[in-house]
Length: 325
Image 1 (cartoon, rainbow, N blue to C red):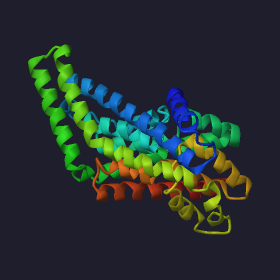
Image 2 (image 1 turned 90 degrees about the vertical axis):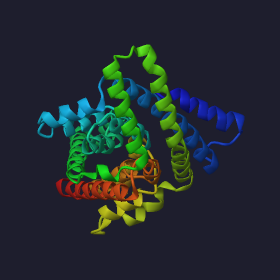
Image 3 (image 1 turned 60 degrees about the vertical axis):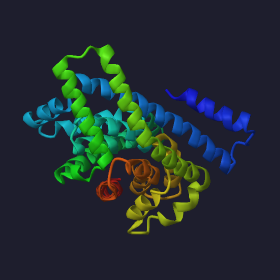
């Protein structure tokens, strides 16, 4: 889907700037260009589409539907499954997270998507089957969906909306006012576009600095942290290998398909599969660049609660994989 962005990044780094493949600077810069363009493009498209949707289905209607209709947790499952079919890394999932929040989707349900999306996608599933077989792949997919659902339900019970940043609350208030005005006046679509566009520009202005800084951090980590650096902490004799692997994964940044070959290497070196998978989940589901992007929409307390719950769920999953396998 994003091959043209990768080709552009390769052309800038290797043809225009004449940097050599394999150099730390080249890898970091290539990653920065690719992810920055991809995430900003996603952010623009998603916010624009959510603006159009919100103009016809105001936030209050969405909230009323979800509050009046008892879905018995089905909404969390649907959000997690939607995460499975969206091939995004943790940072790329943030634009959709912002769009969901802006559209009035409950925070816990939105978290279910944010957690599952980077962990499980069709590319990762295909690679997983090839590397570890169908049985382990099914276990991983089910555990990823259950992880998103469980963490989303737990976070939803905490009623954490009050810890969203003032910027998000202002965006929500604007979206609600616009939706109500459109509904009352039955404004033609042509006349809605300038208002929707103005809101898109306003949101982008607020988010872009965080995107640039977050992806910059991710690029440095991608280019300069050696993949074998953490292996000595994950040996099978260490009772605390799973939590250590999960925590040490946070400074790294990659998508599921990018880290899977590393997981295979770790397993071939004798590291238990559950520990290796916990490391993978930590890399793709928890990252400093993601935290940097989320800082625009969440207070540090909410980011801490979110990372804490997801970390705990990943650690439990890692231990369960080690026991079962």
